[in-house]
Length: 124
Image (tube, rainbow, N blue to C red):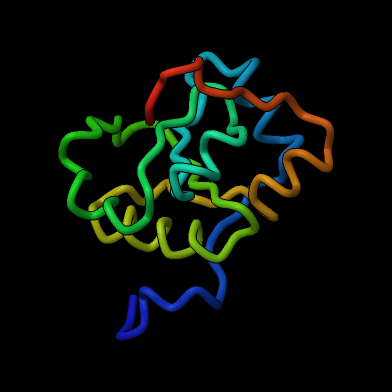
């Protein structure tokens, strides 16, 4: 992974918004979704079914997430910088089938895909 695994540049595997939407709705074992944006970004709208874990907390909270290592994981943020780092963190923790949502929530919303919002009074 190299010395600069945390660098927000470079390449990691990616999935297009339309492909992710198709998989999450139709696959018998849909990918696990992790949204690594901040709390206010999360509250402004997210992909339904995503787990919210700000990037700064991802490594420390990894064990408690109880992710299934046999299913793919898709990390997402606003545009792709933080989710790129999240994919590298996931890989470092043994989740080899991790990728990021290409273009992040911006791409998801540009594609006109559904956005969920927490209920009033709801937290992360």
